[in-house]
Image (cartoon, rainbow, N blue to C red):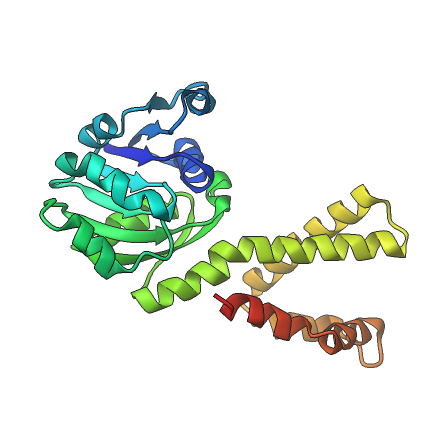
Length: 253
């Protein structure tokens, strides 16, 4: 049984907590938050809760830091006595591994990783990227986060790319969905009809390409009849800078 403490069960830490609670096997969870009222959400599901970070970290085998990047150093200082022999997984983006290594110096931590899941961990559909800071626990990290989706262990340079594509990418994909919904309403659909149609179409497109193992363009080619309305729509989107805008959004960090 892997005893896991999630320190800071906010948006991302909470999504991981809910996913592990729903889909995890041989795991025991304790979550902490900064405010007692937030804990009720998790305790009502049968998840162990506490406001005491040090107590949770002392109990755990694996510690997941779900706090904001600017709080990581302070939280680490508070649980420092409990880190020896533990695996530490930080969900905080943008902190260089060299900085994390400095903060962990002398802690005796068994292994530490930066792990970037996305909010779909809550439903078992996260795309998670992870990179080692110190030590080696690839199999544990992969096994744990494969429970809530798919996982890739990468170097630090590719971790940042994975964050933009897969974690920030959730917002980017849903911004497309919002635009497509608004376009559907302009064409005459009721808002709820447009929303349901866009979500189902996105889901079907992804499942189709995944089932075939194809490049997106291969499936695009199948629906773009020469001289048809789809190719005209695609060309209009490109004229408006669609692909360039997506790439700019990913790389403008």
